[in-house]
Length: 171
Length: 171
DNA sequence: GCTTGTATACTCAAATCTGACTAATCAACA
DNA sequence: TGTTGATTAGTCAGATTTGAGTATACAAGC
Picture 1 (cartoon, chains in turn brown, yellow, cyan, green):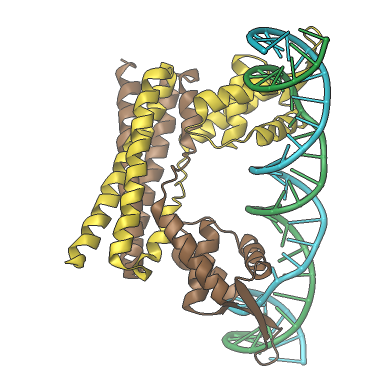
Picture 2 (cartoon, rainbow over the protein chains, first blue to last red):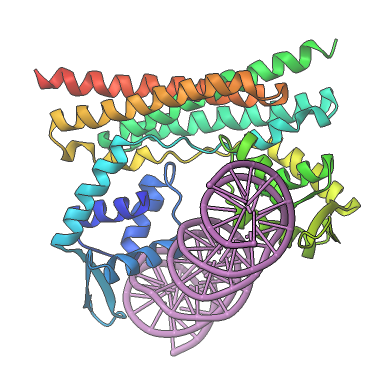
């Protein structure tokens, strides 16, 4: 449902055609949502058939027809409801690395340390990337970036703890 | 793929029938993976058709037939590969609340504060739940619980910062 | 005026995921 | 012995998601 909220929120600000919506998401939101282009079209379709979005076709020059999505009054109400629901509720995220962690003792300590070091490098790289992003994205994204940076710090703390444990026993 | 890893990891430890696998996941893993019963059956099917798992039917008393899933040598190799891939790579999680955060300025400050307070309560409740779980789950789950507790702490820090910001401007 | 590349704008089949449903056995109690 | 409820063990239609593919237009260089 958060992706419905996202699309409604964007269309609420300005009507758009699918391609532009997707471009915007790829450029500004990619770091915090997971929405493939084809999925976006699917959801836009759904929002239409649910009456939250209205479709108009327009043509610019000789280019092929474009479907322009406009939000409807029902869509506005839906946006309001979804926004409140989103902000008021906590849904714990799923961490991909948890599954591997459960089985980590299956590996020799030296190899485990190496794998974790590799992951650590990726985390730091991602941290850097977000710090750069922070200077480039508009201010209404700053809270979200701070959110991610806080979680990345937590992730680093955790990996480092695991590394200490692994290397400790290695001696 | 992490759910493939999970199922292979469980079957590697002991062959099982689908119902038991699902029970185990519901009781021990529910807090860290997202795997519906019907999805588990689907994935088990897939693992079979990929040759990673072998199916045997057995019958206990007059009960209906049970499909018992055994891991194959190929499955064992697959497990080893997936485990290494899982541990060596960082994939940033998606946080549902990010979308709402982008649109938060659409709401009156007082209401926003109320919604965030509500979420805060849920976070604390979840924290308590995990602290209880920690005393109940076997030690190989402790690292995962610590992982979640660290992220929950980050989440609390973040909500509290947002609350401060909101209430500050409210005066 | 031809070719190469990029931007525009999706469509669709196949893979995956889910909630709702089915159906048999057994234990316990009335 | 009839009924109620828990346990076992899934199935399946429908919803969702994805990667790969399609098709046109315009710009720029040669």
